[in-house]
Image (tube, one colour):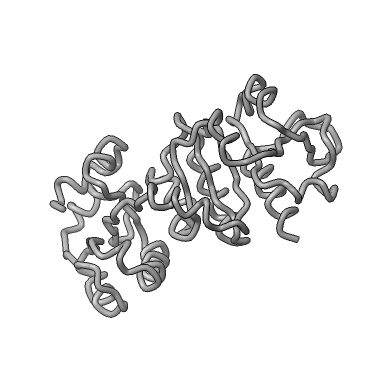
Length: 250
């Protein structure tokens, strides 16, 4: 794609229109390269933009990415950070319809469902945790932050390349795929109870509102809690998901 079009990819409407998103920085590009070696078909249209300082580095990595050298001024226009490193990849959006088809085939995966999550940092951290432990699929509801938002991609530290995801999954449609669900509630069983590990899908809600109560009444749900001192009212969403995923993985 053209450089002028790549500059627009900070906005979701252009990511959707052009079918690409941005990956910035040496570490993330190296993670991207690892994923491309495992799934070359998914990344074959990737373009790598570098400043002159990164030209030799880019030529030495084992990749089939098309490499373009641009000026520091052009890099600053393309970058989402105040101090660009000098390396940005323009990456094709994954085929999430294909991912949805695969979801029904892997019976060993547990699913984490996020309802209208808004904070890019939270989503990036959750992706990082799911990639670390493995064996999880992430389902994201409509009206959530876009996982291909540059801030999410950056905070995921490359995890976004390793976690199977499905977008725009309606909460009301989950009962077509799962019989039972877990969610967090102050009055639930402790997450270290054996029952917590026996469920196929775990629901987590918006940072401020949680999971809608009317949906919980319709779905076959079980309530669990993360035991604490009670000194504060609630946990950060990403922290809560991280603790639950750890409990499911030990």
